[in-house]
Image 1: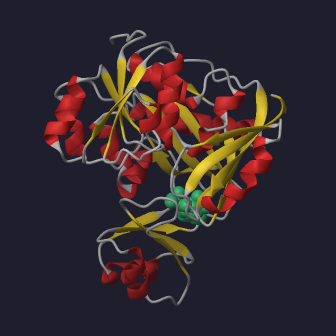
Image 2: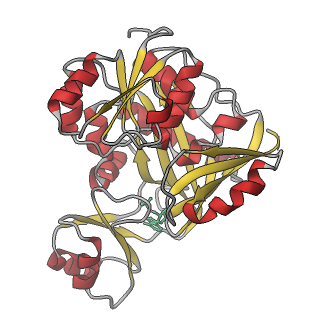
Length: 362
Ligand code: AMP
């Protein structure tokens, strides 16, 4: 694998806050970043040396972008795979289209996990209201119906209670394919971020606990308060997925910790994967020597992976539009590490920034 040196240019597909924080970490290592996204208003544009404005199906613009950079990474897994093919013909892209293909589809993701020995909740794929009705007859309820593609932060999903009409639930997800999942009565929700280089070297950040509100991540606690053997199981599971998927870059894995082991003796089930930096890893900027963003840059640039050892425990709070009024007190609080993404328009539920509180020595 080629090792990129300072002054090389890292291309980033997508211009949101994950791209912005990746570019800031890359700058620290002497790289410059070139972001590709449809609007110049996006958070990453202000901190990148160059911007190509274009849609993700604009072959000419994608090709121009690919020719201007040394390597490409991405901040969003739901990009058209054809865009990655256009870029890969010119310059290396990490993670590859084959990783994205799996990560874009909740059904493929769970099937893949099971094939490599990683536990998931029971599920069945449904393609119509009739399909759903017959699946519901054989499935333990309550259950959760999600669209297999393009769902995030709770969008495109609905909890199915006994006696609910299949047609109503089907209409609610607004998709032509759904995954009906058994409801997991979990103890905790946790996540692990694994970094992997092209030569197969991996490392994983510590397991953290996530609290969601209205399906959006609200708080991350580092470390997760779980038994050592459960933390080992979660880390092994995430590393197994990153390895078997041949991810180059990061794989973020959201998991459920069960109250008691299932029939296979598993205490941890995979819920969802994302081959990119993750909201539950933002605490690493302030509490670790090497953040998840620097780790991504190192992995795609072929540099040695950084340390995943935190120096501090941490609590990260997401700042949504409705929380912006609290920034005045956070910016005045010496214990608060405030990060704002420079979004011009604030809306309820929109991620505007985050704040990390360091909680003493790790
Ligand atoms: P997801 O979009 O799959 O990440 O789901 C969003 C949130 O819904 C998760 O973080 C859980 O809190 C909850 N959730 C999703 N799937 C299930 C499930 N099968 N059982 C229980 N809760 C779930």
